[in-house]
Image (cartoon, rainbow, N blue to C red; front, side):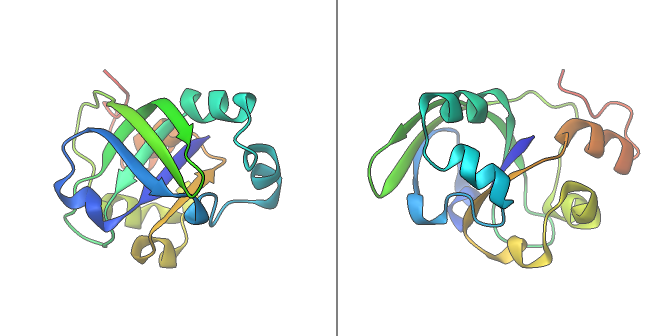
Length: 140
């Protein structure tokens, strides 16, 4: 499992905390996962914190993808506040890389141009390692 957050503001993102519109939470996510995570219960938050999270700006090309772990998550009513830590990955990932393996990652074409937060039922690192033909695709 992994989270996918797509937002134009990640273009100049330098890490740390940010707030995300709660209305966009769990878009392009299966109904089963929405049912399990939608309440943002303690268990749901613990799950979200245990999975890797992809932060990417909208686009299909040379945009830099950030892989992070959610450290803290706060429900602020209309927004969700997140505190994240970068995952040390061994190679840069670009939107173009994810575009080429979007089917394997369960990312729809429209998701590359839509501000949203989805949760996908895929193993992010295994898919990237196999599909991008990079044996060093694991977290260092």
